[in-house]
Image (cartoon, rainbow, N blue to C red):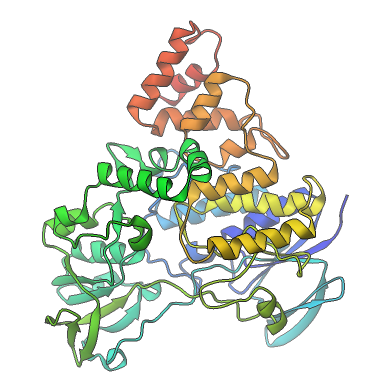
Length: 510
């Protein structure tokens, strides 16, 4: 039993799921939220949200949620931002999380003191200092726009000006205008695609390098059930990095082809060097000449944008989509030095702890390919279970070794894969269903996308209904050929619709 107090900074997805599992382990959480309601990035009324009103998710609804809640049947495969916010509201209501929240309260300082932490906060003009036994930092990774240094950028004179994609709230204002989008990752590709399909005069995408691109759905199957399965996650964590990257590149080229085939620049042979991103429409829009891909910007003269190849265009607007810097302005200098914090990196054991900061956890501070909710849920469970003793806490030596591995593997310098990280945290939390005895269920688990339900089958907080939901999603979303092979295996055993519960789940799903 524990009645230790835990301050959670932020009531977005990270903070909510941390509160849910800390509460289940008998901690006393207090969630500090500067806005008037929950949701973080997914609440478009929150000034710290960089989501535009019409935005859809890049990840399917099977993985863009927590395991306790389901989307209503009418929600499309790729939910709107308001659908995700509704899911978070359902999650908060289910676990009475609002009663743990202090809204309109901004944390201004976090200090490590003897046997705990001091939180300084402001609300309504007043300042308050409080002691907590433990703290979870869940204020988000994507709220401080990174602005590139480009000569003349501040003096751009196009009529619509310069914004960062974080402030892309009114897409319609660019109708019939010529715009330049800066960046080559998901946000840049999505903004460029959004504008090119809205009737913008001309859309230029300026990037330093061409990444490989995957669609979010292929042949009717969400990407998670093709590339981000548990089986692939296990392989990625066990085979050599070079082999892993080669297999991923082979998959990308099989599904999407080489970007140069569409009229985009040819990427470097090394996927590791040039990276991977996702967009459903970008390459097709390049092929239709609705997006014109250019090299990086050399300088800006008034409303003239000059690229590094010497070409020039006249632009009405520039939208910067070059990512975000780490932003933890409230942590003390001592804590910042301990974790060696910069605008891009920090040094933590398993993305979460530091041996010299016991009782402090960081959530969701990495770059990732794939949906965050599943990974955040497993990280929250590891934090709660290791602090409560439900699973053994790492020793000081283990944490120091893990910090050294963080530095050696450059944990925060490269984008991680959703399935790899979810498995990593699930193993630490004791929730990875690796010892399932039923061979048919084991096969479905291996061939499934890494979903929250997968990690509710075994371990602390297991849910008997999780396997039903996992199988329903598998029969709905998995590739037809994979479903056919699993069904064939059931049939060969003579159990189809007799002994195994799984085909019955299939029938229910269909």
